[in-house]
Length: 287
Image (cartoon, rainbow, N blue to C red; front, side, top):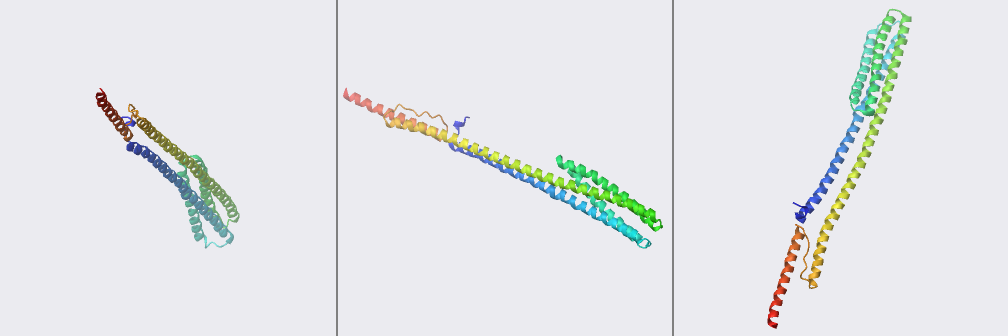
């Protein structure tokens, strides 16, 4: 079955149906890209921001633990507060460790995302491990310092406190690097979302241009086919009006215009036969 065998209505339905499908594809692509961009923004909010929050919690609790240790050491002869201070320090360090562990979990999930985010997450993991190790070392030295202080070993207590402070400096430095990685991670995710937005815009414009060209091409094709057939019928009608009944409308179509051409040719044939019939009686009368 050829294209010309379809009715004009069917051709129009197929042509404009194709255009509708193309426009629907553009809309679906736009929706898909919008969801993709939303996912990237959710990643920034759900992962990058909690990393900052939890690392800040870890830093604050670590600093508070060191402050408590310094306070205990400054009392010199007051041992009555040792149990409660130890409990407070342990609670603060547990909070700091929990914050770092949550950051570690977030970084682990980001490692699977690939690209710059994965690289920053891996670097973050190294600093998290360093911070956790320093917290454990600090915890041991701080406990030893309190015991030395309790036992009157002043010099030993001061030495252990200095070593504990050095470990806490390592924790603070690691947390600072974690924040830097988080800032770079956020910038990377935002840049990726912006890049995808630009790509999406370019692709959508391309699809719209393609749709416009296809629609324009279909319009030109259909109008050309219709106007050409109608012009053939008009030329044939003009020749018939001029007395030429031997003309035939050469329109090979299966649609309504083709049917009109067939009816036109049959009409011209009837006119031709009618004129031939009229000439026959006149010739006999003259004889």
